[in-house]
Image (tube, rainbow, N blue to C red; front, side):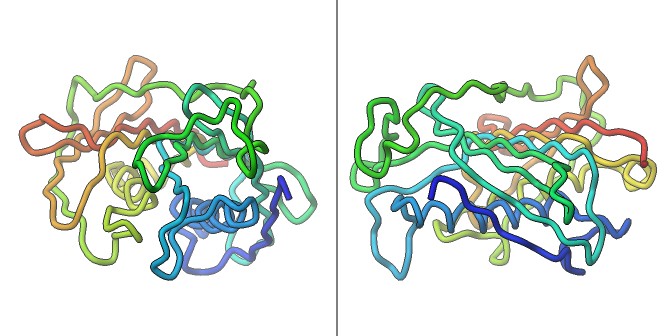
Length: 246
């Protein structure tokens, strides 16, 4: 029960113009298998209008892709608890091809929230269903991402109906979509994303105008941030690492 594997055939709606699985498509797989696994563990999401004991907030996530599957390829995504890191419950995902070879990894830092109190639940020392999460995380930590100081381009976007989740906030996958959309198409024609990390810092709600900015850090990787128009609120920051197309 501590692990769950789902099998997928890469369909037309989750590939990009190269015919490869997109990061957005992988995020969709991730959210589906995580929700199913949470239910199996007895740590449920909202369902049929009933208020659960707990709910999850994804705070940080990092996607690392060694080899991209293509349209109609068969893949599997397996998820399992990675332990706790301070207040975070770490969830790990392994992406494998039809031969069982590991081709990608996802690390997610989640806050488990008490639905009645609206406060994070401490995982260390937890009992009952939460005890399966009660062990220290020993993998690589997901760090803070800075807002780019030198801005290459800006764009204003709003969250609309099709981008909202059960809580009325913009769905996690669309923050990723907004991030990737800031990259010039010429860059994506010559390169693919080897790593994408996104830190969710505040919720974007319906109709809110968000200023997206893109720049680079000292390592030459792209940084994307979403701020309020007056820069008083940072909604998210992300870092994209590219490699030449294989």
